[in-house]
Length: 474
Image (cartoon, rainbow, N blue to C red; front, side):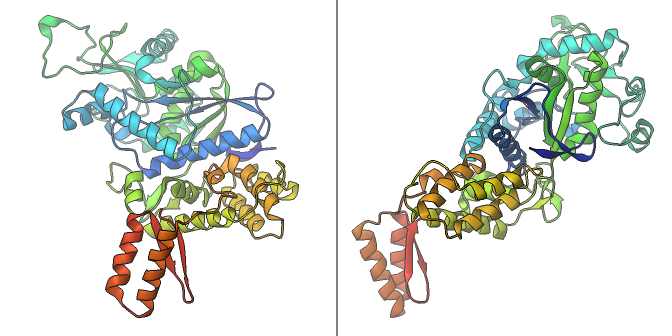
């Protein structure tokens, strides 16, 4: 049985679903305004592992995830420019084109990381659900939770006594510690935008008064005026539409807890008088030199950056699994390359095994593996079980079957390597032998030339004291 840390209760709880044998899970997806980075992808790999563990435990998982393609303002608050609009102006294209460009990169990267994402309609876009968001805001307005300012419609947090429950910080403390906003019309510093106006006062579109230089590219009519939804409302509207309310699990990054997820809870519970989700699961930051890896700090690395350094996307997935999801993970190139080496070693060991003698894994190792994963997704301990199994005295066919069963959850693509020894062409062997002989006689120029020739043919030659080893180049 899965036991997992619930941010709502701040305890490790035994998981139980609302409907037997089914889990409804919502994940906060990307804001598609810029190149995604490997810090972003840690969360998606974690949720992928969570889904696979739940399925291995016998659940059917209904997974929904949003794509934020409007409404996320710079600084994650209620002031400033929409992130997509800002990128559109910088790159000289429309915000719609920006969203399509970076969503495609995100989807392609997720595929290379072996992350299985929901399919439409459960992979849902904010811009496709404007009516759903407006309907939710209308309910809040009718119940007296919303008020109007010159720049938008806001949620009054003082009217929601449970505000702060998720973060564990009472409303009065959140108000005292809140940063000063440039909008003096807000009743409380913790109040947040439900709908932002394109024009001061919330007037509807009037061609006679339209200033093309100030026109927004993404805006919709509403009962309060032409504008666009706040960032938080999309998740409340779409999760309820596709999963109902309450649902079982809501996931996100730890940075979402104090504002984005707190606001989701407030508006959803205020509107419908039932909890939004029973379990809240959050992934810690990836850091670089002790600082959060983020676009705003300019300290990010993409998957393409990793490839250029000889680190595959699946090695990055292995790197994520080497740390517990609730622990900060510091990125260095040395650590990334160590993950690549570990993955290569695992592949090479598996290549030499026999074809699985049957389809059943070794029960003892499999139970240990699942026990670690069911203990709050303890992936580092699960990897340790993998290596214990690899080094064990099981016959190689049984090892092959066991590793393949592990990889249904780890998803490191090991089926391409298990019991599939490398076939080295004779001409490649001949070049490698010539290079080794050149190295022995210390003819470094010829040795380097032949090494480059091998690399150009897709082969890597690792030298040892008494010989060398050939393997496909990463």
